[in-house]
Image (tube, rainbow, N blue to C red; front, side, top):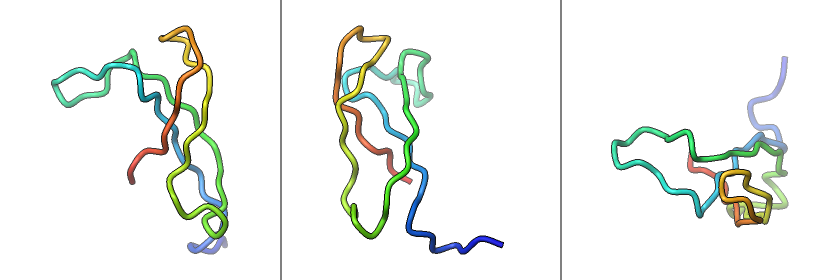
Length: 66
């Protein structure tokens, strides 16, 4: 059995420049990455600069709310 309070958690990163639809649903234009972070060392939200295939350039990706 795994512990529920593991230090490493899987998080999703979402492009900040892609446009969302106003209907409340995620559009197909939004690209997401998944990564793992250490909760003890990185307590704030993660921000990384990664390549977005929809924007065709490197953009800032922020961690999603849970």
